[in-house]
Image (cartoon, rainbow, N blue to C red; front, side, top):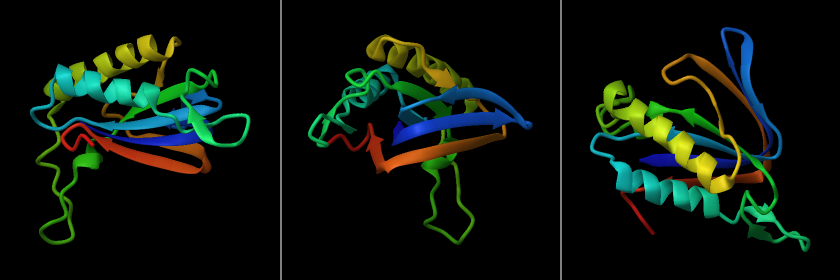
Amino acid sequence: MRAVIQRVREASVSIGGSEVARIGPGMLVLLGVEIGDDEADLEWLCGKIARLRIHADAEGVMNLDVTQVRGEVMLVSQFTLHASTVKGNRPSYLRAARPEEAIPLYLRAKQLLSELVGRPVKTGEFGADMQVALVNDGPVTIIIDSQERE
């Protein structure tokens, strides 16, 4: 399971020209589920995201997590995070989990992140053609992969 976390001043998701979700300051999380990912990967990754200290404290040091700054979280599914570009120039998505495996984990990630940050997590729509807009704050962008635990 792979996540790209961006500290944002705001973010929104639109589908078919209509906005379906919007957050203020907090984090936009792009989540890709890989074949074989399980609940242990999900719990580890969501815990890491919720505790990620990427928000500024009173001295301007990235020392606070999203709950400490009362930030919001938006979760967007993105199978392309598991693209392979080893051969040629057209990415292969063979490592990305099929919807029947990925959707339950994505929905569980939404639930678990909501519990961990103590507020509802906004989302896009799994599998939809979404337009994601954001104002990256910093910019701060972090990549975390449950298969490469550091």
